[in-house]
Amino acid sequence: MKKIITVLVTFIFLSSYSAGAQEVKNGLTWYTDIKKVYELSNKTKKPVFAFFTGSDWCGWCHRLQANVFDKPGFIAWAQKNVILLELDFPRHKKLPDELAKQNNELLQFFKVQGFPTIWVFNMIKDKTSAKFSISALGSLGYPQAAPGKEEVTFLENANNVLKNK
Picture 1 (tube, one colour):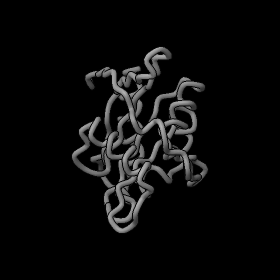
Picture 2 (cartoon, rainbow, N blue to C red):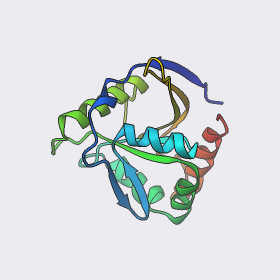
Picture 3 (cartoon, helix red, strand yellow):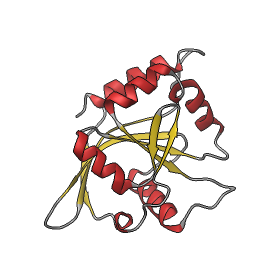
Picture 4 (cartoon, rainbow, N blue to C red):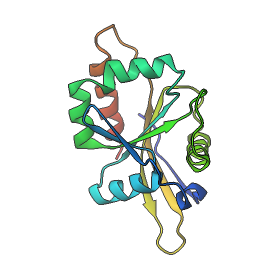
C-alpha cells in the first residue's frame, strides 16, 4: 500500500500562471494551471491526477496516452474520479516562464525521476496562512502488462491509489 504523505508548503507558482489553462483531448479536459485545478478539485471533491510528461520527446508518454488515456474505459474513469493536470517538460518547445516554473516546482516536490509519472493527490488551502497542504495518495507509471492489457492494468492500479483517500 502506498504511504500517504502530507506536507505543508507554500506554492509560489500559485500566484501567477493562468494562460492556456486547459486542453480538451478525446473528451477529457487536461488543465495546466494548478490554481484552476485546485479550484475544481476543491469544488468537486475529486483528487488531482498529475501527469508528468515530455510531450515532444517521451516515447513512453506517447504510448501511455495511446494505450491508456485515449481508451474509452480510462476516459469514463477520469471523468468520474479525478481532475486532470498535465505537467509538461518539452525539449524542443519553450513553455511560458510561469508555467515552466510551476511544473518544475511540482517535479521537485514529488521528486519525479522519470517520465511518464503520475501522482494523485489532494490539496487543501489554509485560509489564514495561504499555504497548501498536499496529501499524496500515490503514484503511477506506464503499466507493466501484456500487450493489449495496459488500460485494464492501469485502471486497477489507479483504483488502488484512490483507495488511499
